[in-house]
Length: 237
Ligand code: OAD
Image (cartoon, rainbow, N blue to C red):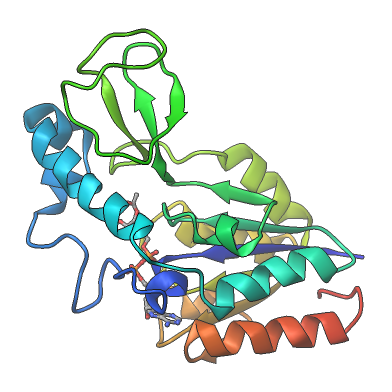
């Protein structure tokens, strides 16, 4: 029985009402990316960065729900005979809420904070401000969203590489294939012999690297593909 690695991007959460990064309704809301998603931007204007992520956090907690694609991946993990790991670039918690348990947040989590003074990562469901003190070391001024900004190293890369090298199937859903290292996962999995499948509304920068591409909305195509995989027994490849 072979294992499955699923990479998800902003496109899987689009039908839940979370804007993608590079769509017409692009998430940066008029802010240059270097202002709100780099360590230098945070050092320059922490209140601006906090208010940007506070807005995203309150939207996420204010009625956004997992969609059929998130639910189908959780079902795949429960019912497939081999291991299924979801590696997500998304910082929302929609995979967890749908029921995925074997999940790696390579770009961090919006509902966590990290203290720059003591390194403690803590649950965070409220607004962050520069004056807020860390619950562990008590110092204020060091808390930031536990997310990966440009110029920072994504999380779990060694573990992800190991999973890609053992995978029978690599499935990529709703990602533009423009941001590395995630954009390079398909090449690693393919070189190791995995079947590679992309699901996306349109052609992406990575399409050419996949063995198979399916065009359409994740909310329709992911449940259908999961049905196919489960009907095929334990053979992911
Ligand atoms: P993008 O916004 O770059 O790409 C979203 C992709 O989803 C596009 O290829 C769309 O065609 C596709 N898409 C949109 N709606 C869809 C739907 N309903 N069903 C299927 N596909 C759909 O988002 P990401 O690729 O996730 O990193 O972006 C990667 C990284 O760039 C993010 O994690 C973030 C950003 O900068 C950091 O912040 C570090």
